[in-house]
Image (cartoon, rainbow, N blue to C red; front, side, top):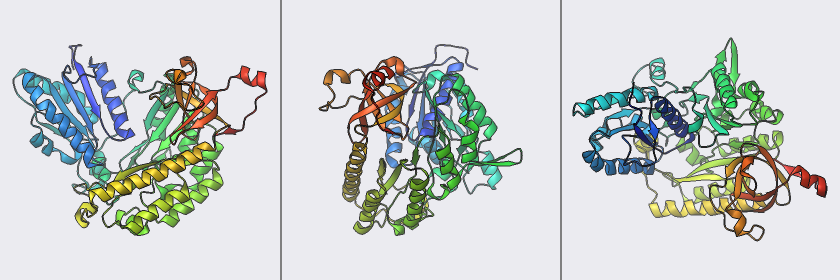
Length: 489
């Protein structure tokens, strides 16, 4: 174990919320061992990269960062460099070939080994040696399912409240891995087989977070609504888990991402309806509006299946907001199939959509079976068309909130300045707070920073495609004016 308490640590994280949580937990463990976090990579004695392989751009970013470090490592040969996460699991020894200054490569299921690997690398450096340690899980064809599953361990040590981006919000991993095998996706290989954590462990972690002042927990899984775990002879699904943690004192809101359309069951929707702390927000990627492309993607559903899901959501949870993911430029995507994706956005009116250009991923079925035949300029045009349409719909739907009241969990000062609107002065923007409504819309408003971590009622006076702009409504204001605005989720 490290005894020198002056080691400075730099970590760069790319990718999804799961990666953000992994980085939080790794750094928390290292802080307990005497490491001090720094934002300056040049002064850090230990540099970690937590990587993503979902898109090629994310990998290029990491290799570029490693390339810049290669020359810095010559000046400071004792600098320890590690690569962890999805790219580490996928590329493995290739990382050493492309970046020989790297000391160790750690897959998504071996994060508990990071601290010890750093110590080992530091010992080797003291002896003028460079480590080449590889700790990764088995490939999906490298053994029996139990063997592969056991090689991917969920990493969930005790939490460090100082490492969260917000002291009032926290991620909670309820499952790891994925068994959906979409043709374009590397996650089943980089995260391993689907495994659900026990409800007992999850409940205990949520209680710890509540004791640390967390008000909102977001349950994480690659396909989070696929959650299943048998405990004490009872099968728990995600709906059962929501009921289990709902009454934890101090927790005001419960969210979960990311959901899979075919696993959006009525018992889950009814649990959200019946539990006041459950947010009226679902992230359920459609990915494409054309059945033929969905079949090539091996998504396992049709647009009609998705339509049925949306009808059930609207019937059981009226006013619930739904967001989506889309891929444009998938191999074989025609202009007609692209227009079907645009039509689906018009029909389902998503709160927002995360839109990505298709990126061929080595090792996926799509890369083996289909040529990446859509020119980059066509991908870019289709991406922009979809983004423009989604922004138009988001702004129209946000406008329905004007003159109405939303309950906001205040996160703190606004992270980015908004352009002044007719209703908000430029002078007030510098002191704006931000938070999210119960349907996950971003809300900005003037207020005392001490409101952070509390629930506040806000009257919406203006909107942008991504944001509601409002004024806080105090009890004194309501009493003096007799104001009684319609309350939306």
